[in-house]
Image 1 (tube, rainbow, N blue to C red):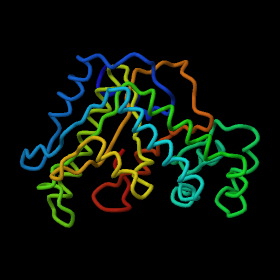
Image 2: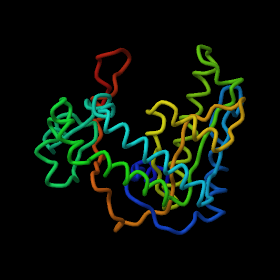
Image 3: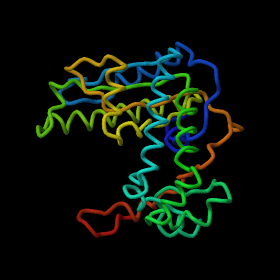
Image 4: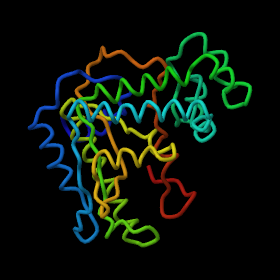
Length: 260
């Protein structure tokens, strides 16, 4: 796949993956390409943990599913991220950003716009939406052939220091390199983020993966081969829309149009 094609085709994969393991040569290729990402003074502050063992993946799935359920029950997710949610194509067209809830059980559709109110949240909980989303998250993580954690060395990632900023910039380059390489190999990828949002849950993963004290586990992704006919989660969204370059970029100074 050409580079420009990979960039345009890169998407977050919300659905399940095909069950076969990631080929060893593909995993090696992904990590080899990641190792070529830029870093401050060539510090190469990242390290990788590839989790393929079934039992360990199930343990992480337990944490991810429980975290999703708790987030939904407490209403934290809705309050924190409601500004990104779109419920119609008209809203998508108007904003050019956010995520569009295009798949949802019919029984929930009348309530989605009111989910951010205490009354709406109570209805969603009564309809057991947190349990459904928790189960979906558990399945998605548990059936993913590969979970990939990325750490930063703490001698570079020191909060409040410029080195921390530089190492996080480098981490972004690593993630994009991994994502584009995976895309070119027919491998999908999704951020496993919910354990980071519930107190104590991320620490459980750090302990499970035996991350040493001189490393900071910052991200965890699930990866697997994609198929166009894979079943989507019960509640799902899409985010292919992008703002135009003319809206995003300026020339010479802020507010001046970029030359055509």
